[in-house]
Image 1 (cartoon, rainbow, N blue to C red):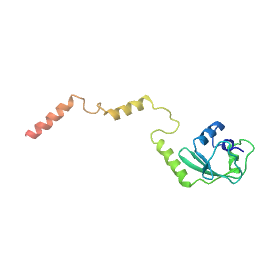
Image 2 (spheres, helix red, strand yellow):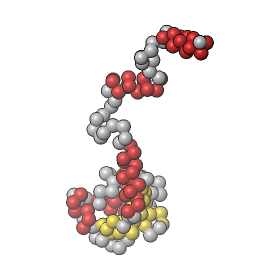
Image 3 (cartoon, rainbow, N blue to C red):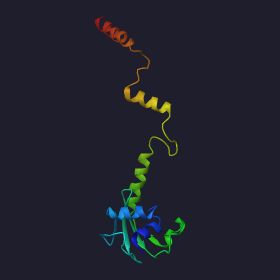
Image 4 (tube, rainbow, N blue to C red):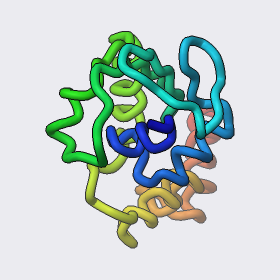
Length: 145
C-alpha cells in the first residue's frame, strides 16, 4: 500500500491529498529516510511523522484494506512515540486555554471593554481627570507646613 493512502487509512490525515502534501514537505519518513507519496509500506516499517510540532513514531503491524473507524486503528499500528512529546502537546494546549475556556467563542463586548480599559489605563477610577490637581496641591501644602 502507498504511504499516503496508509496514513489516510489509519486516520493520521483527514484526506489523502493532505497526506501527500505533508510527505512532499518532508514531514514523513520511513527508517529515517524521507519518502515520496508512492513509497510502498509493509508490515514492520517504522514511520516518523511530524504533525502539530510533535514527532510521532508508529510501527505498522498490519496493512488495512481501506479506511477504518478510529477504534480499529490500534489493530493496524503500534504507537512508539516518546511520552515527552505528548507532555509537550499537553502543555501547549493548556497554555492556549488560559484566557477563555474551550467553546466560549469570541470575546463579548464587556470583555473587550475590560481589555481596552486594562491596556489603556482606566481613567474612570476614584479620581476624575481634574481631581489629580487637587490631590497634588494637598500634598504640596502638607510639605510646606
